[in-house]
Length: 222
Image 1: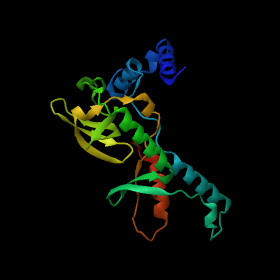
Image 2: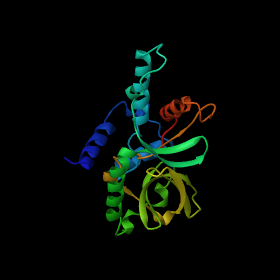
Image 3: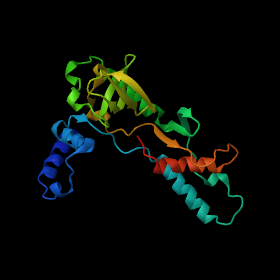
Image 4: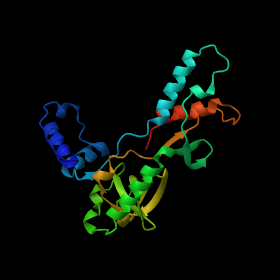
């Protein structure tokens, strides 16, 4: 059984659940996305959970701090180490980062997307009625295909704002450059996470690093 068949089976079981009407709010973008997932399981309409690496690092760091409570100089080699690439830092307090371990995965994903959307078939064009905020999509920018998530959509405008989940930036693109995102590209989580540094931003204060990572846990990931 492939992923699409399994999704269809699960959705049918959910439709027969007597408790569904008690918990489902039949309005808003999330509800519309759930309906689209049921009607068109061959496409991805939302992404998997965001990056959890910063949260893991904070958990290990806190455990080490508790074990060495009262010790002034904790050996630095006991703390977790992860290399991140800064993707975007358009403001002093907000950053977009990508774990370097994702470099090969992102490269392979992008190469597969270029091949898949090379023919640019019109059947993959998303109709206007399905273009609304939070919908996952494929977007063409300068003849390159990226994974995106719709942000601002105006019915009468030929343009939309799309957040590029693997780049960490928003772009204004033509609606004609938006396509359905194939389900095989949807199970990858966004490769970039955004966060903001809290409190004072003195570069000499090492606590800024911990504050920055904690922000990724509580700050809404795209």
